[in-house]
Length: 105
Image (cartoon, rainbow, N blue to C red; front, side, top):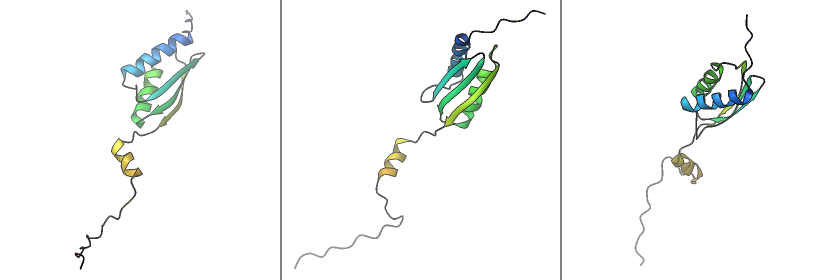
């Protein structure tokens, strides 16, 4: 039985990065890939939990990867309108009706 040569870490890194891109895990996600002795670590920020699953699967299915370490964090993207609304002073849900102004006497 022939023993396979281990795949160099830099090659595994390249393959994982390519697979992540192919599966749609790219900006605005910020995923870093590091490999040491066939152990791939995925770290950084993703927007949705399903991206974690896709990234992990992509890395696991590459020949030469011995294990995958998940250090990804889900940071949902906040639409600009919601940010602006959060920064605007709050008003009552039921604003009071306008007060009539009487003309000066």
